[in-house]
Amino acid sequence: MNNKNISSNKNSNEADYIELGKFYFLNDKYDEAVSEFKKVLKINPSNAEAYYNIGLIKETANLLEEAKEMYSKALDINPDYKIARGRLNKLIGIRY
Amino acid sequence: MEGEVSMNKKQFAVIGLGTFGYNVAVELVKKDIQVLAIDNDNEIVNRISPFVTQALIADATDEKAMEDAGIADCDSVIISIGENIETSILTTLIVKELGVKNVIVKSSSHWHSKVAVKLGASTVVYPELEMARKYADSILTPNILEQIELSKDYNLVEVVAPKEIWGKTIKNSDIRNKYGINIIAIRKQIPVINDDGQSDIKKEINMLPGSDDEINQNDVLIVVGSQQALSKFKDNL
Image (cartoon, rainbow over all chains, first blue to last red; front, side, top):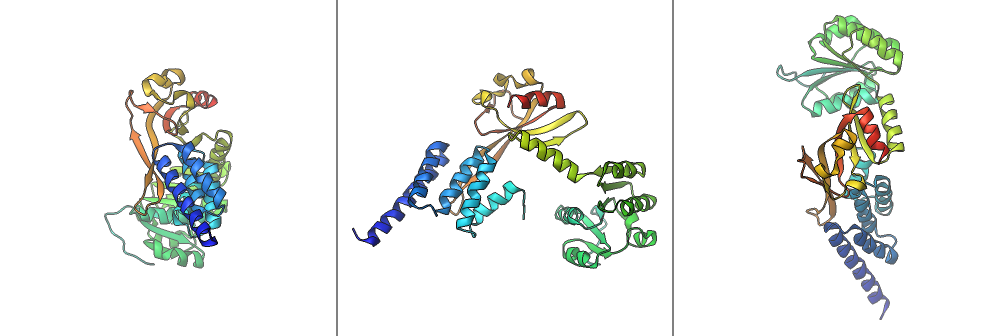
């Protein structure tokens, strides 16, 4: 397998785990969802979407400080992540 | 001055455009209220001018200037000169003498509040103290998300549903008998996928839930009760 294929497989795995995580999240299986997003971060610690989704799960569980931390991590990686910015601002109390 | 004054809408004046006054003025306009914003700082008045009905540079302790500004025609006046007590008190006196019934004063101390009430202020707000109390509560009890004082003895509290009542109906939770508080709403956070394909959370509120409505993990309860009853409930969270 050449380098290009390895990289492509890695991306495909990340996307698969993200989709599976979202599926679990939508079905209220939060622990399973977090586990999928953590698999993504193991492959790629700079995946902002995984941090954002873990943040959503923490917020759903009313663990607001942990949610803020996850949204902040997503924004450190991708400062233009609009939906993460919106959720963090709401939690901090900034409306605009 | 900018904007047009309509006779049908409520008219408010905000005197003192520091952070509090500025934001109150802008928020009132968003709620379709006509707002006359006054400050003696040229720069602040220019900054707020596009966002309010009228913006005016004036000295709030000049009775004639306040009269000319049309303060007497306002339904309510908010005096947010918290950092300068003398100016705030003098302005409150002038506004009351101009005949404004509803005068709201932003206070910066206990004595400031007392004087404002003596002069006829209908409401005194002390945002720093209110925020400090809320913040202290939220540090000590992270499960309390919001707390609103309804009266001297009664509060409304937003609280994360305690584990002991997950999966129970309101009736079976026995919360009313056990603590003497009433659940007036249940807020649920529903996972959704938005139009862009991104996961998100939608909040749904069940207002006035019935006794057979179930309380689940992650629900937020909006409860009303006496301070004593709520303290008892909070101690068990």
